[in-house]
Amino acid sequence: SAFRVSCLPQGPWFRHLQRCGQPPVGRRHGLCDHLQLPISFRGPAHLAARLGNQEEDSAAAPVPDRQAAWDPSVLIEYSLTRPDNDELALDEIALKSWSLWGVATWPRPSDGSKLVRSTLRRDPQSGKLVFQYFGTKELRLPVFTAPLSIPPDVQKKICAVAAVETYLSRTSGPAFHHGDRVWCSLKPSKKDGIYRAVGAETLSRWMRTVMDICGVPKHFKGGSIRMAAASKALDDGCDPRFVLMMGRWRSWHVLDAFYNRSGCRVDPKPTRQASQ
Image (tube, rainbow, N blue to C red):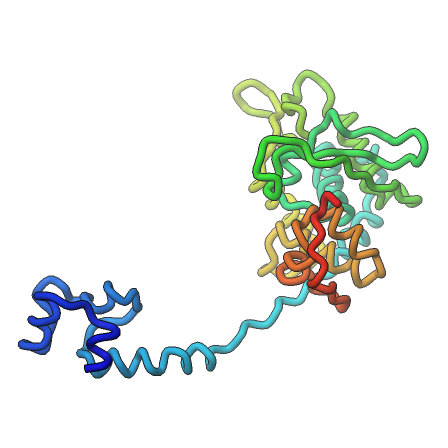
């Protein structure tokens, strides 16, 4: 009776249940609908037992392990084996520039599709490449991110800045309708011969193509470069505050809980925004 009073609804439906021992016709999952439990009706005793064991079942459920990160340095090693930027075909420099950009800045594929071409410029004093995204996921608004910057690498073959600048110079002609975005399709349209800006799915596929060449396990998607590169930066001693800023994570907790697979655990207590 205590179970009836606390858990079951009153009225004609329950009186029918008491009298017949089964729910009314057409309400096969009547109890489950009311209590929002993913089980079929087998009577009050069975349901009471399930409710009593619910907490125990939840406590006994195994917690999935954090997936280990793959090492993005394999993308750099692959770039070292390739010819210089000027000798690469257009599709090759597109894949190279995007993969090295992923290693250097830890973007989502959707971020890559929102990197604004006209914001890319060299800082005259530091020589760093300054850039901005527009309307990224964490902003939730059609506005620019704060300006970010990355330094050039001394080895030009593995320099993300050099690769992107080479790609920009190769895709500045009238055949490239980039819409002020950076990366365009690898091949022109058969209809009009125009190269158009690509979206997140295409950039994820490009990254996965380079990962396949480098032998990265198949279960990692193209978007996993964000997790892998940020974790590698932390393992290499990069300041966690810089990682948080470059990756534009909303808090330390988000970075640590969902992306950090390094041996360096970021203290989840500070929750300063990335803009700070």
